[in-house]
Image 1 (cartoon, rainbow, N blue to C red):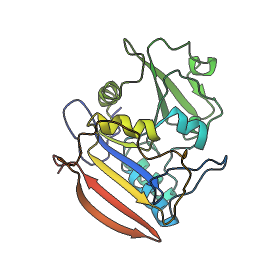
Image 2: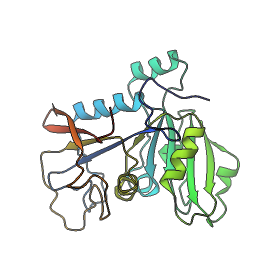
Image 3: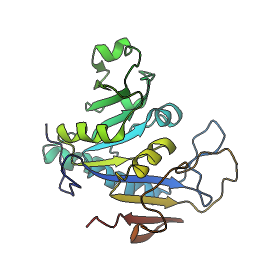
Image 4: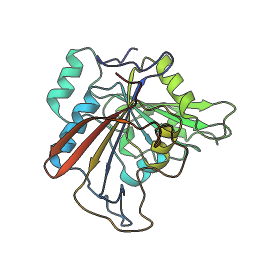
Length: 244
């Protein structure tokens, strides 16, 4: 089923990829507490909802599912209705990258939006939990995709598979290892950074990205396409040099 909302298609063989992250002034995406740290303002959360509504799929890593327990859904009813009127599901396909596939069936990503959730696992993972075998979670559908010959989840292989499934526009929402994998592989077309007006200040708090060899370094920087104030949050929207 083609789940395309009008938008870019980056290249033959993969979707157009938007990498989205909210972070503190010191580059942290969370703190060390058990409670989820809210970094976006209400206006920025609404912007993210609009971006989600214009995508075919939303992707996160298993660590984000375990820690933040996101729904990965379009929230505004008028945006859900617009998607349905266009012949699309009310919210995009949900994608989770999980090296071993160890996820809780009660996670909200497997919720009641009646859309498919794709779980990509590395080769050699244990058998999926029984609820995956049934391919049903209350209100939703789950498909497990193993990537033969790869001990870890290969993001290029994931993009190729999503492209074959009709995904043309993908929103990547983290966390650290996922952002790092996509950016170091040169597989991001657009980057949205929402900067919160405070510091976290904890040395062990997770960061937007980890160490790596990034194609967009000092010699090949991203192009700043937009700066927008959303309450006290600042949105920085970047494009890679080859993007339109």
